Length: 407
Image 1: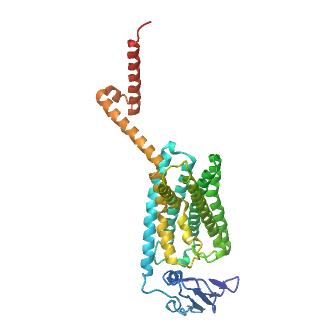
Image 2: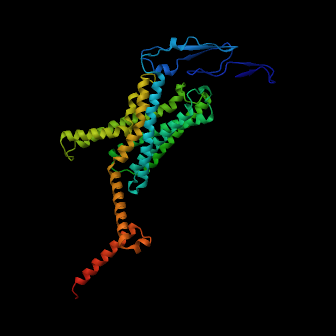
Image 3: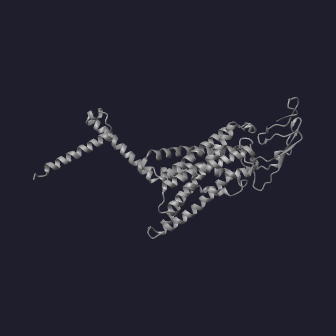
């Protein structure tokens, strides 16, 4: 940073500029200023929970930044017997890369199936489709963010503050927030379906769409404006300002909490319905149905997020990363399997289309062998099948008329 003593630049004092030491980004400082920085998050993740962390400092001199005092190894505890930091982060990144890739492929396939068959077009499946899209966008945003921030391992993170990088972070937070809100809408829709006997689904779906895509837009827009005015540092990937971060974190925690309450309410309703005398079965079958319904609802509602949702972010960081990033990346795959590939309605429609295609193909080949003129006229298998049906019905009517005695 340059501070000039006159409007006409005659003499400039060069202060200490941004510096990246491969662990911490040191912000610009004036000569004579001492800058204190906390231990990098890397050490907090790889240490024990009862370890205490200090701070490191550098002095801005006329010759530039001084040596660090105290050093990282003196005030930042580190578990030397555990997994190395590089190996740990590489393993977590490999795990969630596989998870998001698997989810992306399965969700895209599920979207094609639900869009292809018209008989599957209903409010319930439309909500599923929006949830699938939110999972797809979340996976894509993670890959884009990794490509921008971690394209090169030795990149200088102090200078990753371009508009492109900040736009990627805005898009990433929007996709994550939209995913949480569509998980909330899934729970709200199912709860409303169980509580209310009749309700206008199409009108509800209109409001669901506004909540699912509109509310995250407002939250992320407010967060971006606040970051630009009050915390415009780096690529907006580090959230040191807790007040601004709550603009994103608050709605996420609210959706998780409300979904958990809806989940408990739905389980209570299911217990009451399963214990009704109208439903047959012994006690073991009732509990089996309840357990099956509960397991099906956990990934759809995102109940697993409640494990670390309300704990401080500095508690169990290693476990949190593995659970939320690693295992959470497979949530889209599980949802696609449970609510599309294993769905009885979807399987019946696919089987019906397969049988129809097989029959049309069989009759097309059979007619081509027996009646080359029909085959050469460009009539397809479905048209040929309808022609045979009409011809056979006309033959049956003629035979009936011949057998009927004249009056």
